[in-house]
Image (cartoon, rainbow, N blue to C red; front, side, top):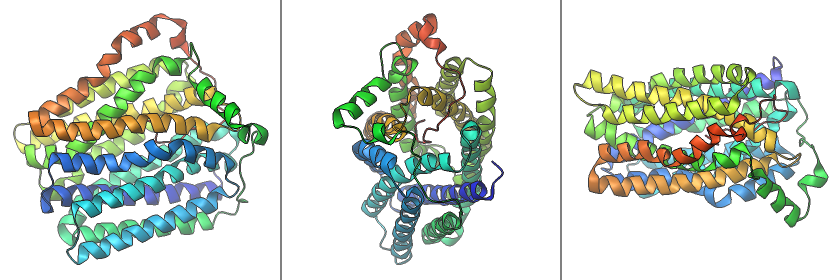
Length: 420
């Protein structure tokens, strides 16, 4: 993984992730502080980012498997996203930004992300040897968390000092940098042809492959309900995080991004720990423990209160713990999914999980926004933290049966980062 091409690929992903964090913090801050968005509107704003994956994820996964020039498609994604953000920076600078515009922007960027995130990790297979893919996956994920750390540290200050237009403009520049770095990669832009006949098989054969992902007795099928409820709970927390920190805890807008700084370090640490844990065996066990830690971390976030320093420290602890355990869970899940993926169908396999989980995220984000307007933000966060516990009877059965032992071998392909 020391090749120049991989380093450029890594930097391209880091650049775009840095800008994405700026856009998220800018959009949330502007919506809550400047546009006075309600919790229902912030829920809609969050759901808009998930909706494209829920609607088009399966189609995009199949298209990614058949892509003949995946890097060219990634560059096109960067150009389109950068153009949208540049237009948004202009609208913000002229004072015409609205919640409706932000929802539309989030929806379009979410659609682009569906393609880009799947293509990124499929194309990675052509840049590193098969035996290095798990470590490459962890290295990319660690870089993403580092970029989010830097973005969160600077985003609130950028918005407070220079305004939302500057944040959107900077994000547009990061997409331009990503496109330039991708263009500079020397490795031929070619598909990873594991089994073209399988990849381009009849619709009935492809459907059978997708159904086989959740085959009877598999670990993935046993924890599928947990994955879905955890997705809904995560989206609910994301939808209410801005209103909770800015309104309930009275965190200044200039410090809003700093509340997430610890999550970047925690995500990097979790990305480092994940491969080490999976190499020791017991991947399903680590996956379940990581998800349990995520539930507890969400509960800690809901308890945040009191003087501002204590409130920020408690919220930061909850967010960091959730990100650390989430990074480990994502690495473990990657190992499980890779073991179940048929040759030539990785994109569709990942898309199946992504579509199902993002459908739950849409429901979680919208439901949280509506529920918070009735019972309050903090109470809704408590409900979201407890939601995955509904799968406890199934998880107990997983632990008690051989299903929970799951696959431990090192994978030979790579899954996509959004399945978390």
